Image (cartoon, rainbow, N blue to C red; front, side, top):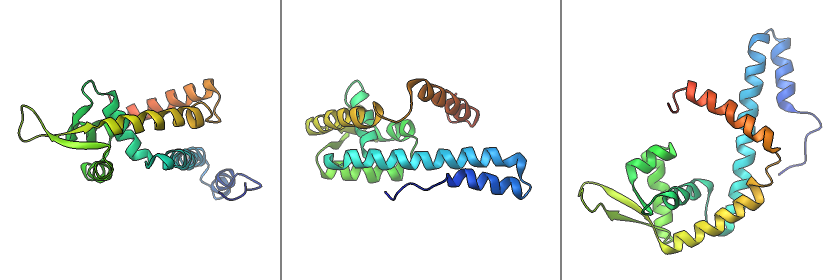
Length: 167
């Protein structure tokens, strides 16, 4: 990462919005841009922590989802929906996880048309170590005080619900 800038470029952009007469849109532009930049920062941190485990955050999410499932397996379509990613993106992640022996595709026991994703024993081990590292190095040390994290989550949840992300 490069050295910090002397001034917040998003605040500067907001000032430019106002100076060009877009006052009504300036705060939303700044908030949306700040959310996108913040997401990028957190994703870079997560990927850096997960790299020694041979994972990206997207692949970690697949492992975590399978780890939370009661049987350690889920239908691909269900996993795609819960992860809120297109089936093609999930297939790419699963291909890579399968190539490293962390997950496998198996036939559904009662529905021959359905493939399940199953967490392997090695996948469970990698998941546990990666989760511990993320908890220690990112989630416990996010740079957000607990009250701010809670409030931010509530604000973003309201927006996501209003946008139709969930009921």
